[in-house]
Length: 170
Picture 1 (cartoon, helix red, strand yellow):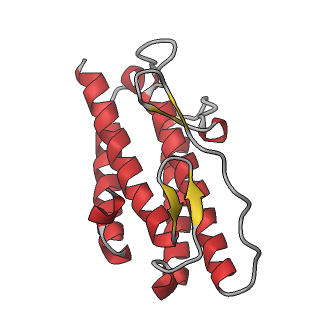
Picture 2: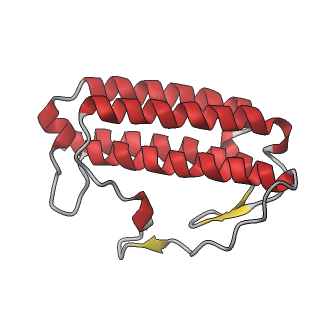
């Protein structure tokens, strides 16, 4: 599934396009649309954006750690817990990836830009090592190389962009 996003260069193209689409879409939303929860147990678009930034920040740290492990500069990660699903089969974000809320539109945009800049730096630093071991277990996709973690970011951002768009269509 993730392999369809290709190598790092292709992933970066996908990420550039999806981020542009995401930010353009967010700009088109009123504050009410951006911050209102569709229901008590469903995140607002703003909370989804915060979640996207939390996941991207975490994946950037994992990519960096995998590079350091490959170079002998760090120890491998301990195992990560398996992911949880809802009764309807949808994946549940691990608690550290839950949004805290309360960020303004400008703060969300700034955070999304900052974490993307960090991920791009980690990918550039990782270079040719990205598709090679070591690996680290993703809660839903199993053991992934740094490239695999980059591919999850492509999947994740595209998934949440479509999710927000569909929810707002009603």
